[in-house]
Image (cartoon, rainbow, N blue to C red; front, side, top):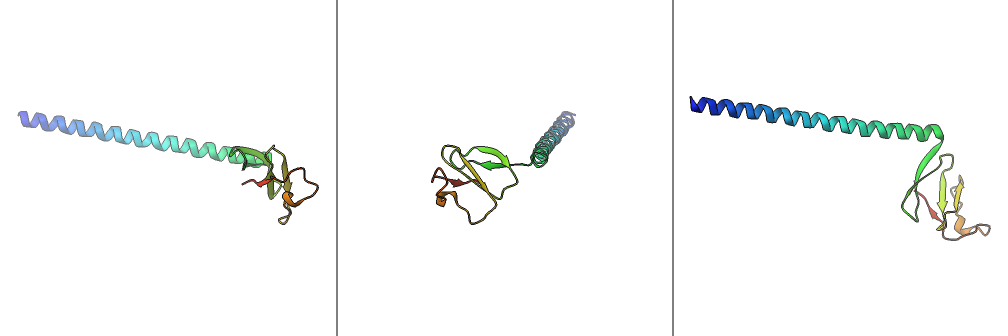
Length: 105
């Protein structure tokens, strides 16, 4: 009788542990979906507003800029040069105010 009670207790413990693991997995799925949906909403907002995220090459910070340009450079003091010409480099432009431009990515 004692062995039967211990077995029943162990089975109940195993069932509760399985339920806890399933609940944790469901929670992880819900959190993952929330993150994915938030990312989708953000990308949609950027598309609607005509913006794109760029990494400032001087600070490493993410910044927003128009998505209408193929090339973007930024100087150390924050000046931004936008161009669709793949051969243009503001560091070689005599009319540019600086020569420390770095391409944003």
